[in-house]
Length: 384
Ligand code: FNR
Image (cartoon, rainbow, N blue to C red; front, side):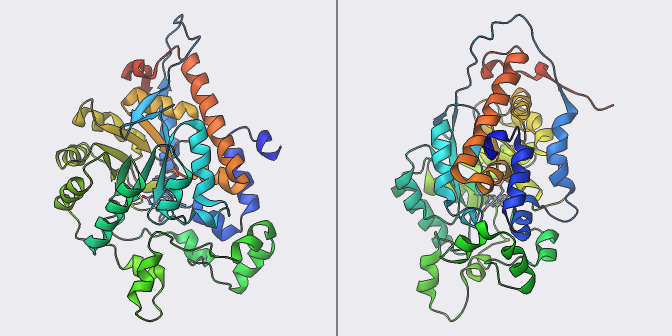
């Protein structure tokens, strides 16, 4: 009933804030440096007016589309997020089950807390694995092979993390991964027993997809997090994208592209799409809002590639705006994590139901009965 009374994503965010210890909530909610991009990602949507058509039969709205070569019931997918089990014990599996019920794509992060094979077994729906090009290319190649064997439909290569972003909320809160029991964190955990008791027992913080590596290393007390942190490679370039595209030979989106030039280069290097993204404002603070880059990116790549607007979507109307500007679909991170933290699978379900209802209502009021008919004339910048 708490979930039912949530009228929008903002309400679910507040429920998540109540349920989670503050350092964990801030890890989801926060961004890099001054959080300028984090705020702008959301605010930029209000710089576009929706210009409606009228007297167009809107008794039924067509919302189906193809993403990563897979059918999606409506133009939304779930972005990859690491450490999901930290927000709710039912983990990535709960999120994927909700995605399946709504007929949309789910993406699993390399930093996820569920093994990709286990996710694939539990979830028959269309799925994408978020991959990195690591220093050890063998590790990346191993992921490609595992994804193919497990039946993943696409890969999303994240390219906006050559180093970790500067998350000052995490520094202030003393969040360490996995969380350590400092006096401050103990106080916060004690005030949130429904989260803490199950979370602090059991292996909630295991990077399940790479944990076999640490056994193989047998090199003293290095933690999984140190190992994976040491695998980030600042020298990655376009040649590596070409290599990955050849290895995978299937739907591949480059996640973190912000400019028309890099979008064109992504497609020329063998990708089938781009996720226009600044990592939800968690990496380069000051980067433009994804929604403001969509029209130029679509213009650069032509009709065929997937162009996914990733970041700042908090209303169904945001999705309508992104599609009118040229996006194939949108993806969300924090909104579904708020839902998960607030109420597990039912919470994610609530988020997706709210966004679907908002999306369909906006399409109806805008007088557009098919997402394929959304066009630039349906949006207008309102900046003075
Ligand atoms: C992320 N994101 C992310 N991206 C990625 O490629 N790999 C990852 O492991 C993660 N992990 C992660 C954790 C958390 C807690 C958040 C909030 C985000 C970024 C994510 O895929 C997506 O780009 C943003 O979340 C989109 O912005 P919104 O929807 O959160 O505004």
